[in-house]
Length: 399
Image 1 (spheres, rainbow, N blue to C red):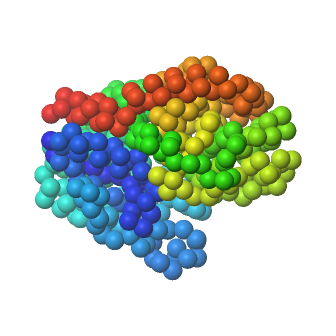
Image 2: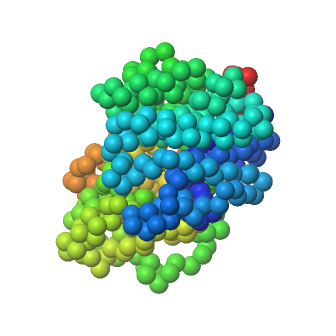
């Protein structure tokens, strides 16, 4: 099968941390024997603007790159949905995406015509999914879109502009893919009649050999609680710092290690400055994917208590390393990970429940090990290879 994939969140040669999961999924589809070409619409931002705004790696992105045997084309288009424009974009994505499509439609359609795919697949309806839908309808072939964010769907219920935009995008779609059952329920409720299905994300397991790599000096002799994420408000990392600080004096050997960077870093720093046990909290900064996986092999507990976490590939990665997870009870991971079996669930936004979960795990080695074993067994079912098989079956049924 020839698959044309559109993804705005896809690794770039000069920014390999963005969209790692997308490359992993595409690679898994390729491993099944499918031919696949990637088209990544990237913001057309002048270099000078990136310096003024302090962001915008797409300005330095080359037009094409080969990720092994997967060719990716990077097409600049006039959509820049970050910074001061992000709220306007969220409310009225059509104001940004439709003019950008008009300026670049010929290039997108030319790429598709030359490749002659059997199906078109995209991530995120409000960006690449819009392009995928327009191209697929022009070529009269099936198209599929996977969504990765609760808010992007839920907000369509009370925002008519956003809702109308998504109705246009999903017109004629072969299947609209949710990464969690809660997301699929929202799709069915807000957009009745649109064929929605749940296919959980997968993971590239943490290599077993990483467990044999000696810990760095800062981690030796410590019970390590690890959090790795992009730091923005929904992730609730300052809340995790506060919860850990509440019980750190009971566990002088415990260490909270935080990996990542993002817009919420000032709030994280503020929480650290107010923490009474700051010497037991380590900020690792931004990590490359392999570095993050190594820390998962080294840690004892993985904790990410952000609210509305759609699925959280990072949970599956940590579980593959045999680590118990601490997760918010409203997240998509609860479709598969069970409280008291694979980790401990906490109330979204609740400090006390996070304190209780950390206290139980830090104080009970046997509990950590039991939940970690269960987590590793579950992670064996949450691979990108299995995800690719599920997606392939969906594609084939449409053909």
